[in-house]
Amino acid sequence: MSDDRQVTPRSYSIYPRVAVGVLVFDGSKFLLIRRKQEPNKGKWTIPGGLLELGESLEEAAKREIYEECNIAIRNVKRLAIFEYIEKDDRNEIEYHYVIIDFIGRYDSGDLKAQSDVDRAAWFSYADLKHLKCTKGIKELVRKAISAMGR
Image 1 (cartoon, rainbow, N blue to C red):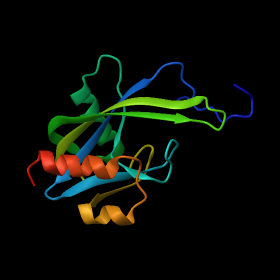
Image 2 (tube, rainbow, N blue to C red):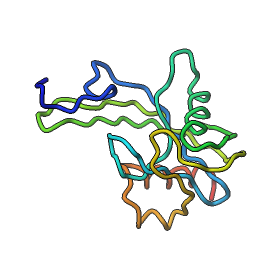
Image 3 (cartoon, rainbow, N blue to C red):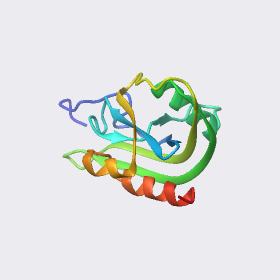
Image 4 (cartoon, helix red, strand yellow):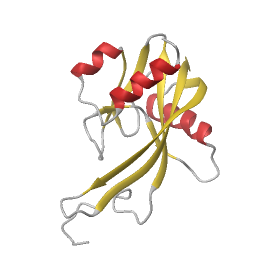
């Protein structure tokens, strides 16, 4: 790796990182966050983050939602597994995440963007066509709505 690269604590890892993401529903609306940091800075996505040592996937999902959005969730169920690999202009792997996505229901708290979140808001499926989202979000929402029988 040459010296002119922007290396962050999460970029150019020597191993893939395990993360969780949660598509939280409150009635027919779902929660998205706009990322404040790379990768995908400025794009809308589901909240989530890295799994901590000794933490279950469900615990991580609940913790990340609270840390990023200040809300508690319930009825957390696994939905999908997503692999995110991003290469730099020299074809070196800059980011590699294995993300386990969940569905959850809003339980309590006042929605407020925190930590590495630029903005957090509730959306309907029709709103997606107007948002600049990360890859796969529209399909994930469609899959979640189908899984919930709506």
